[in-house]
Image (cartoon, rainbow, N blue to C red; front, side, top):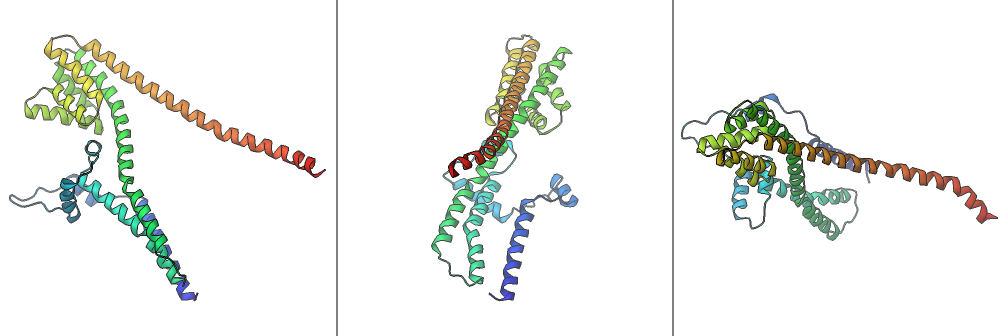
Length: 291
């Protein structure tokens, strides 16, 4: 192979690696576009908001798609089904055509390549990458629910403190939600704001959100707060006990996780001990067989 061909192959391979690193490593966002995304300008009256072409056909496909999308997890993560589907298709196409890069490099080096093996590898990579967004979404949603449980434990204690100050249950829910920071408290504030807008009880809004997003702690709080409305009972002790139970459950979960991690740390030590014993016994065993 000539030197110019080697240079072209090296440049193409280096450019592909640089492009892959650029896409995988997150870069610092630009301030101007980030601020415009956080506070977009209001459209003019009667003007239609344009959508990205990919999202337009993705929305049409989502409506006709016979399969099942993780809509609950996507709603919890504030991700649209259209963007989720675009990611799945993009990754599948990348896996399908990625072997062509290797084939093209081999062809530049003058090697004969069969089309069957790269095609089979591309189909396998496309099928595997098609399910990657599902796995990532489920993993992120699981971590988000655990994070929400921590925030809910603090929120329950804040609600109980407000109830101890002779505040109405609905007002205690809103005051405690406004004190906290983070997306979990913003989610609770959204449910309470929706209840005020729709003229419904706040515990019903919390119950609906907990059922829709699979957040059982919200449903438990809603059931407890409903007692004050139906029976006029004092729910301070019940709410504090629920908060203590939530905190105890989280502590037990962290303790079990720490115990599992400590057991994993013993495996490398045992492996090193086995290797050391093998190195010590190997000369003696070798001398026995050489006698």
